[in-house]
Image (cartoon, rainbow, N blue to C red; front, top):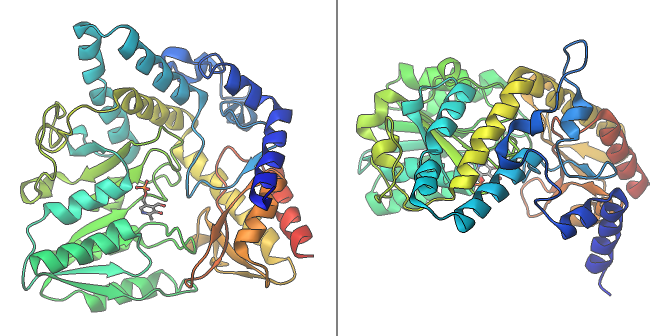
Length: 428
Ligand SMILES: Cc1ncc(COP(=O)(O)O)c(C=O)c1O
């Protein structure tokens, strides 16, 4: 038996002990409440005193109590309501394939668009429902008229859906890309602003950066950078894969031209749904990348969201999940997740041999915490954590290798303490 197989079996035992594996095997739909997509089945998420009942929030997820999932930066579990909505509407599409139900399903994009617009502080006509951040970022790099003499400024720390896409399109269309090196540890907001201020020149057309990096968990001065870009007559693309659903971000405050995100990360929504905000003032400069039938009904979506047949149950579930976040309150979600991030940072930093890649300054980080586990192999540490029912991510390769913890609002402080204690035990 391989170590991997043993680990997976150990993990399955932990799942089974919590009862969820049996539930899932018996009937996915039966295990879900909130069927038909009602919000958390009408259960209250508040305590008698009006505070958020975080245990009730946690109970909306299928993960058994013994499992600690600290991997929001990669893939979040979705709520029962999301799973219920996806299952129910998919089942209905197949069991009731009537024109009237098809029409009802085609219409689900508009309430989802409204929910996303409220989440981001945008107008519904500025929201495109995509398949994920990769697609959203690519629609931007493919959709602007850029050519010889034009320049785009990127940061090495961006995701490939940003950097690799810009470089490949630059080769094809003849514009150039100026890449700012990673500054690690986080050099401070002013330094990052200075880096961009010096890089922008008369040829610059756009800057592309990541709101919260998936590598070291560095927070970028998003509002300051967008303001700088606007002052210099340059467009801005903010990759929000690690901030939508985590930070209380408002595009009217941040003021980017483009902001992107995925449902399956911090929003805890369905797979293969994403968002692209496009400021109304750049609509006339932004071309559609895919042209097909079934666009949206409002604003830019009429011309830029025609992707043919979509997974409409997932889009509907995304809208419902955004309402779930709104009911808790993005300000509360951000505060809790950042406090959990701080607890993780402080606990890990105390362990002998651990070296933190993530900034010690809570204002320069959020809930992505990356560290070097002494001289141990990060993948081995993550595998050992898995046998203890703790889900983390390994960063392998040459660029700041280590282990990444990304707690979210469904975690408790005990979860974080358990994960920190497990790292200490593995290293000790
Ligand atoms: C910063 C950043 N941008 C983009 C992506 C791509 O996200 P997706 O796989 O949802 O398209 C990721 C994925 O981890 C990311 O961390």
